[in-house]
Image (cartoon, rainbow, N blue to C red):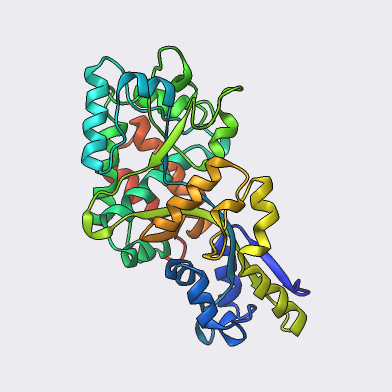
Length: 349
């Protein structure tokens, strides 16, 4: 960055991490009131802003907006008529999955086709399960390449995922359907009469792909993807934007401080398309009921972590991770081979 901007928005924190390592980023903790930050953010958001620099670990930026990923969508009208109940634990969700199979349907709508990005929805599932079956420290090590994909922790996550994904009684179209179905088309069978599948895990953006004319809270709703191991609580997987400062001047500091307030997003929350990570953002500010509910879920979460593939080097996160998961789900390689091939793409190893 020969002529850096005063402030830059990073939807992929990995790139900011590279600039922090190069010593290009101003440490937020050198000018921001840390008591204020600890009051207005969950600790997990502050933890995710810590990055390596030539002078040691620094707070490289502040989180400004995000979207949630840990939602499971369902066709509410048909669901209520069928008498299904919202699962509170993973075991309850698996029991519901089997109950739907016993009723003659497949529970899950899953599709990972996305052109050159095919496979990314599978990486989201792996991240969700990792957060529910191992520590935040291990999750962070995994995204940095310090916990390999071939480790028992990562393999266990894949095996838990396989209990749903590789069971043809549980997924509409089976594993072949998963690989060939465009991710945006995957939830559509939920809204057929009767539904061909009943559950779809995806970020809050997916409603833009739902069939036209559906009403939130009437035709569809969502619940939190349940926890697995009780000791790891209720984590939430997110993506979002972190803002970093490159030129240290009083007026630039003032703008950065403004970004740490819910007020900075108030108009955006009203018009839709953003969620606030700030504790002082009122749920009343949201103009969209779905976004308000996601924001409430995240407020109630025990921890928050960023999309792991977006934190990994692109060779892995947007390369071997996508491909390895796709190959495994397609059945062209076994799990051990897929995990080893993902690891092999990690740079400088």
